[in-house]
Image (cartoon, rainbow over all chains, first blue to last red):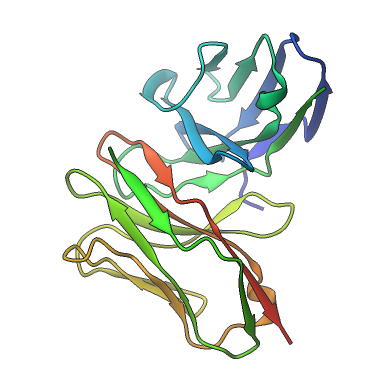
Length: 114
Length: 111
């Protein structure tokens, strides 16, 4: 158990809908990362927050947005969902920022868009 | 741009065989390098890391050395066990905090 929690575990929704994925980092970790894992794209970095502020951005679509709240939990919002958004979404956390920081991954949320 | 290339497998080995999973990278500057492991139905777990050239990361019998001259970070284990069956990801982290993962290598160890 990494100490990172993600809810829900599974989510099934229809095209065009909007969903929110939630992540609680390990106690004491200030940095949160979001990743998308799919069979065709592999593991893709989406976005990182540090202490409430956006710090790094990867291959995140405009239909997706995220935020980190004062209690340090983070939410990833996915809107106008398409079939291709079906994937595993992972959250990870680390104590701070920097090259050597280790990330601890949550168990993931499996999103299925029908 | 920055990228990670690793052998995709799947790799199938007998128990107690020697394991090598190749990983090479392209990056500007001096990234940190990581190996993560993903067991079926679980999230990724950090296996080992190296933060500068010639550093050797090691954990649970796995080793990898950061080779700047060959831009490589190959994962090795002298004697694999059935419990090592998983998907292994090589990753780099840049100074901008972006983390780039390789495609993953699936390993199956048979008794």
